[in-house]
Length: 105
Image (cartoon, rainbow, N blue to C red; front, side):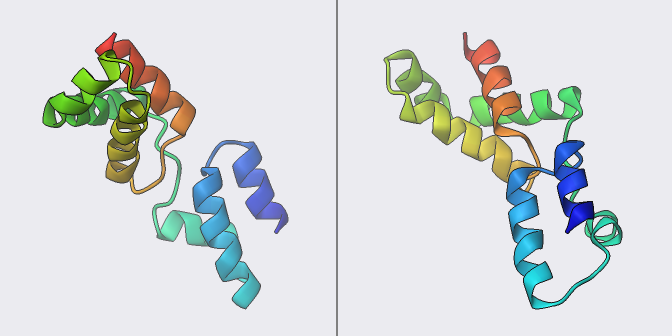
């Protein structure tokens, strides 16, 4: 449990990933650090990689971009969801939000 908290604190894994690991820990204890490495669950923090995912989500969903620019805030969440899905839940939402907003103006 301590290793799990340390990974979250050090931003090595997202809260979402930590919650999933916690569910598994309740069932049976295991080496969290080894599990995170083996399952490739480390947080995606490479800005260039995240920018690529954001760009793809924006290009593939022009209607959502248009809707956001018309004031529909849910459209931003939709775009963020697309990016986070591409990272399999391993991106920090606040970082994705900032990047998407910068890209769509």
